[in-house]
Image (spheres, rainbow, N blue to C red):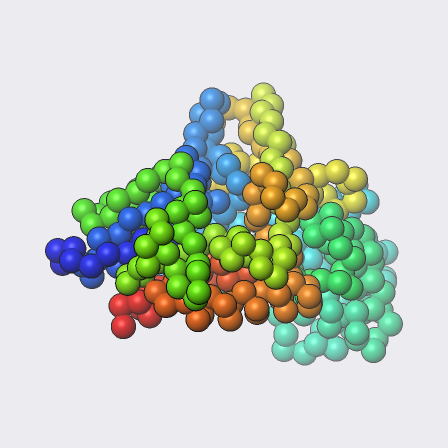
Length: 384
């Protein structure tokens, strides 16, 4: 461990900020972390509720990756147990697995037609394990299109309308491709070789990550009140800086919405507890046809907890209001929003010592491993 002789400020104690802080601290930087909320861990924050059940305050989080080096990295800062997430969607009153698989076809089509759909899917997409709903909708075979259109009208379209507040035609196609169609009866939300959850909690992982003599963390501190950008220079408390400033918040806020606010979706969580053993078959179940909430997360299954009763949350999607208190969770990726983000990014890249990253800073829908990889790249860039 090197003695601190250099300085850095990191705005945000979520995954991106905490990883960069640790990497810089290990190389001799004195790192001040500012966090607007009253806790570390960002949206991965978890806690034990009054019923003795570990819950995730901001929706479900599981770690999964194809890259051993990323899994090895998180294992340096805590013990992790293998965990394979299973999800479902309730369509026409029936819960079917997601990603949709051959069981979904059996669930909603008569036996003869279901058999034919499965056969033509394997014929049209040979040697494939999955296809996107976009590919299936554009398939020349009418049976494949019928299946895809059934899913699109009963799940993708209504779910997208609630989750994003837009018709799917207005959304970047990458969003619709996130949940593929399986060409088998295989279940499980992810196929990555490394899938895990913390043995104790995400907060314990973050405590270990930030536990370094060169790192100071200040909670309940809105660093944007201390930072400003004037004449292409970043100022802290009115003074020009000659050390790294890492910013993981919304990039449009950093530049005072110079090109207008970027659109994000926010979430509202309604927590409930019932004296029953199980609320639903799977930990995460989407309800695309329900008029209000988007999905239900049952936390005693995420990870599996042998406790009486069950705690679950209903998740509602809503827009963020400009200047309001709504928490921005998901960048709303449209052609227009990405054009505006590119302008903000160009501004940021011209400011010396400023490094913008994270889901909100990069205006990207990151999984945890993607956020981790991007954070390590930023840390390496600073250290070079």
